Length: 125
Image 1 (spheres, one colour):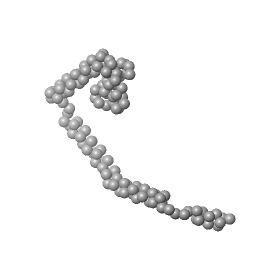
Image 2 (cartoon, helix red, strand yellow):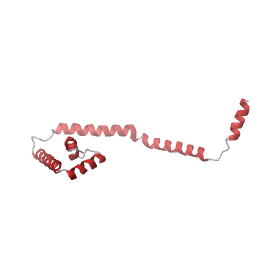
Image 3 (cartoon, one colour):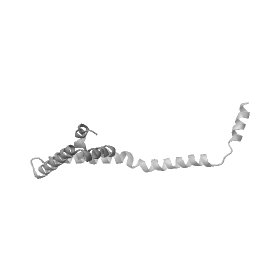
Image 4 (cartoon, helix red, strand yellow):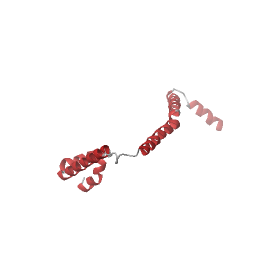
């Protein structure tokens, strides 16, 4: 990884939004690059400072109506997902299990299918 690549994803790394593989690449780069480590430390310090400023200031706090709308939207989405999948999921799992058992039983039972094939061929002839 080059410094330019790291700088493009530094904020995502600091926020914990990268994939495991990308995280490993970033960590390997940070082990070797003092300049990028210093940049990351500065960005993390800025994030902490801004977080404390927002937490301490009533003027910077999120509007309570906005927070209520977001929470209601999240709750509505969760209840919609439960309504769509919550009740059907156990029955679908049972049906899939039964289908698998039937298929496995059909494949594993010792049945001589050759006589049936021979009879069908004889009927066709």
